[in-house]
Image (cartoon, rainbow over all chains, first blue to last red):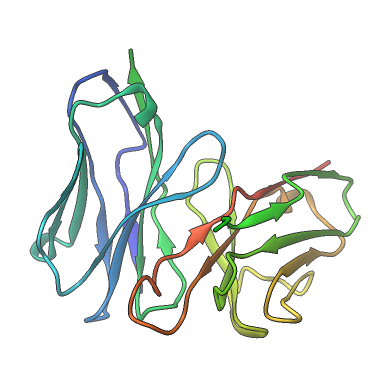
Length: 114
Length: 117
C-alpha cells in the first residue's frame, strides 16, 4: 500500500527563521517518485520538486532544500530564511510508475509571522 | 502556455441536484486526473484519462459520479443527486505522456469548490 504521512499539521515561525517540513512515506514499489506541492490560499497546487527513488542526492533551489533518505523513508523539505510569502499548505506526495495517481499526505500548514 | 483551467470556481447547489464541472488541461497534455480534497486533507484520487480513455477509477467514485473526456481535450465531472458529503474541492490535473521529461509531474488547476446545502 502507498501512504504518505505528514505528522506536522500546523507550524508557525517568525520571518527569517528556518523551518523543516517532514514527510514519511510507505511503498512496496522499487521505483517510485516523491513530490512536494505548495497550496496557497488561492487553492491551486503549485509543483515544487520531484525526486525519483534512484536519486538520493539532496537538492537546493534558492531558499528551498530537500533531503531524501531511503533508509528512513523520508523526504523532508527545508525553507531557509522564511518569508511571509511562504505561508501556505505544503503537501508531500508519492506515486508509483510514471503517470499513475498521486498519494498525498494530509499537508502541513505553514504560517510565517512578520 | 496557459495552466490548467477549471470552471466554475465555486458551485453552490441543493441536495439532490446534478452538477457538472469542467477542466481544460494544459494543451498537448495526454493525461488528465480528477482529485477531491476535503478540508484539512490532501487531495484524493478519483479517476484519470489518457487521451479519451478512462484508465482508472477510485472506489471513491460512486455510481453517482461520472467523468468524460470525449475528444481527449477538456474533461467534465458530473455528480448526480448530490449529497452533503459531496461538498469538497474538486481538483483537476494534467501531465504530459511520452518523452522523457516531466511526464510524471501533474500540474493542477485552482479547483472547483462545491457546497451542497
